[in-house]
Amino acid sequence: MTIEIINHTDAQTRIENFSKSRYVDNTYMELEWQKVWKETWLLAGLESDVQQPGCFFVFDLGREQILLTRTNQNIIQGFYNVCQHRGNLLVTEEHGKASAFRCAYHAWTYDIDGELKIVPYEERFLNGVPCKDLSLRKVHTDTWNGFVFVNLAESPQPLLEFLGPLAEHLTPYSFHKMVLTEDQTVQLDCNWKAVVDNFSELYHVDFLHPQHKRMVDCCNDTVHLFPNGHTGLAVPGSTVSPRFPIPEMPTDIQTMQLRSLDLDPEDFQGRVVEVRRAIQLQKRAIGRSRGMDYSAFNDDQLSDVWQYNIFPNSILSFTPEHCWLLRPRPHPTDASKCLFDKISLEMYADPKLAESAEEIRGPGHRQTRKTSAYLPDDYQRPKRDIFHYDAVIKGEKTMTDTIDQDVELLSGVQRGMQSSGFNQVYLNEDEMRVQHFHNRMNELIN
Ligand code: FES
Ligand SMILES: [Fe+2]
Image (cartoon, rainbow, N blue to C red; front, side, top):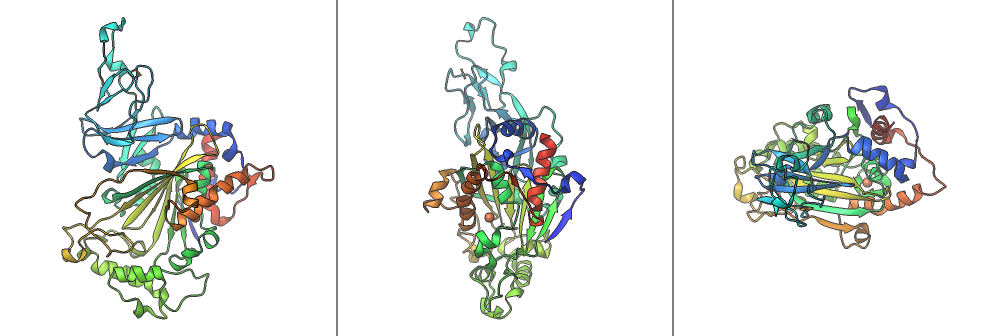
């Protein structure tokens, strides 16, 4: 593992044990609400859900709900999702398109700019109805690379300043051009930070995800520690783990990757460690003809899996062709529960680049189709699928083998942390990103 510390301060690199209270204690949860959730930029959702005026989605976070809409001025604006009459939650759908927002209780109606427009029996309000003062309450809203962010603070720092060098690192990745293909939320019996921790270290991979040895090299990873608690990780992909015997023939994953690029796996007999380089070169050679623009990427980025955590709770795991947004959200009242979103985005072929259009036409799952495919004509935004982790354990739902393994384990972590037999977390160097995240939590909370 290589660690790169970017604009570091001592506080960001300090190694220290920390008490379990932050995972199990509702007093800590309240501090977290005041000092973290109400003070930090938060990734609320996708710009693609608010493409036209009137399009909206609701971001549900702990005790708050934020309504995001595209206004008549064609900007994305967040509002507290609360009617200003007697405080009913205003919008109950997760996303959609509206010409106005009408409260179900007494029909107060707001336009898509959040202004109060209709109050039934207005003359009965003896003090009048000052519509301007009774408009929906705004929250700071901004966008970056296809993602919509909100900040509940009065006067937050600019979003780009908050993201800092992380945003520059991710420049070649065009998340804003990717298309939502799956939208899942699982209810977990663990604190939201146990999920962040889980996606901040590779120490557990050999043991919990033994199948990874046939697709990534977790020994030669690069870790980045950024200001403001963000972290990054680059893992060599299209290869095998050097901790295990190197197979004679490409693994099943490598075989699929080679075939998808018109390379013959047989040619790599006894040369399995050369597959990664071959994939880089082939993407460079034929990417354009497949409608994929790799010009901004370096060679490593063409084969490797990156995973960048945007403080506090958004985890992006991605290649040039796909991205998972993994996002644990806190429970409103219970420190030992959270909601965990997995939002899958895929890059589809750009018909302007592709030369051999017929060859790649048609939809298909990313892992079985050619390097790229066109967005199907009948594409529809998938509905959010919400389920309890029991459904994953029973095999009724899956979030991919790897995430299923994590999800099945995490309630055991929470149960263990609540035990009198456990007091504090004790980390190693492979868990540097976990440490960095908690050091930032400490800075904000203490
Ligand atoms: S609470 Fe919304 S109209 Fe009364
Ligand atoms: Fe894992």
